[in-house]
Amino acid sequence: MGAVDTTERESMRRTLTVVGLLAVTAAGAMENVGAQAPDSMRGIAGLEGRLRVPAGFKMSYYAKNIPNVRFMAIGPDGAVYASQPGRGSILRLPDANHDGVADTVIVAVSGLKQPHGLAFHKGALYVANTDGVVRVVLGTNGVASGVPEYVNHYSGGGGHWTRTVVFGPDSAMYVSVGSTCNLCVEQSPDRATVLRFNEDGSAMRVFSRGLRNAVGLAFNPQTGALWASQNERDNLTPEHEDLPPDELNILKDGADYGWPYCYGDRVPNPEYNDSARCAGTIAPALKIQAHSAPLGMTFLSHATTFPAAYRGDLLLALHGSWNRSTPTGAKVIRVHVANGRPTGEEDFITGWQGADGKRWGRPVDVVVASDGSVLVSDDAAGAIYRVSR
Image (cartoon, rainbow, N blue to C red; front, side, top):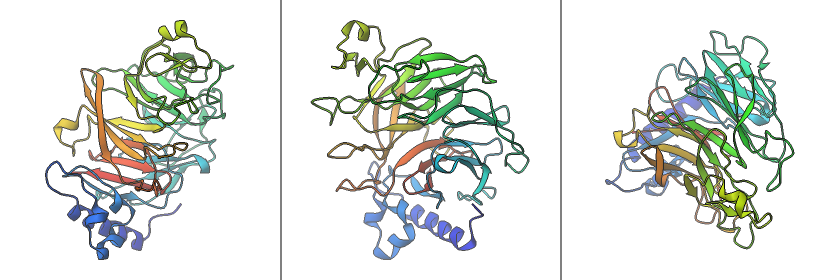
C-alpha cells in the first residue's frame, strides 16, 4: 500500500479537530458523539463519531483503509506495525510529525503465512505465523532488509489459527497456540496451550495448558506475571447463550486451566463429567460475558495521556459474539487491577454495535503508542483509532 494522499490526510485532520471538540461532556457521563453532533458534522466525524468513550477522552482515526488489520506492536523508533493475516503482510505506520495520524502506510514485511501477533525484541521484529515464529531484521527505513527466518515451528492452522507472541521479563519467548476444535482432547501436545521458548526460539515446552484459545497475552509490569485472554467453548447445552464465561487468566508455569474437561470455576463439561480432574485446574482470574471473544489487551502503565487512576489497569478488546441471539461484545473494556489481580470491569469504548445488534466494526487489539495515547485496531472497518485525553 502506498502513502496516504493529501486529501485523505486532510480528512483525517478534520476528523481529529471535530472529534476533539465533541469529546468533552459532563463529568462522569458517557458520550455519543454521533448522536450529539448536528447532521452537518456527522459526515466529517465519520465512523469513529459513533463511538462512545468516557468523559474527557477523545477518539480519532490513526489510519484508515487497511483491511483485515489485526495485532499491533510499537517499533524502537515509535512507528506502529500491524499485521494483515489475510494478505500475509506486516504494515508500518509511522507518525513522524506527531500529529496523531499515520504519515504513511507501507508494507514492511510480506510473504508470511497468516501472520498475527508481533513483538520487538533486541531490535528485531518477531512475527507469529500460524505455523511458527519468524525473525525479521529491519533496515533503517523500517522495512525488512532480508527474508524472514523461522526460529521455531509449532502446530499450524486448525479451528483456531491465530498465534500471539510476547517476550517476558526473563527474555523468554511465549506463544499462544489455540485448539483445533470447539471441544475435544487434542492429539498434539502444543495445542490449547501457551508455549515457552528460549529467546532465540529454541527449547519449546508447554508453559500453561487447558487454554482453548488464548489470543491476548500481556505481562503485568508490576508483578511480571503473564496474563491471557481466553475464548471459551460454544454450544454448551442447555445454556449456550450465557455459558460458559470467557476468561482472563493469570498464567503459572505448569498449570492447567481446564479445557476441554471443565469451564468457569472448575465446572465439569457434560461431555466428560470429570470432577476429579477439574479439581486440579485453575479457575479464571476474571469471568467475562460468554461469547464476548476477548482478544488483544494492554496494561496502561505507559499510557501517559491517561489519568493516573488508569495506569495500573488493563484495556481489553472484545471482538464480539457470532452465535448469540442477542449479540454481545464489540467493545473495549477497562479491567480494574489491584494487588496483581483483576477486581472488576467496565465499558471503555462502545458503539461498534447498534441497538439492533448490527455491527459496523469489531475491535481486535489495543496497544499504548510511543506518545502515551492508546491505539485500537478494527479488522471489520479496516481502521486504527487513537484514544487520548
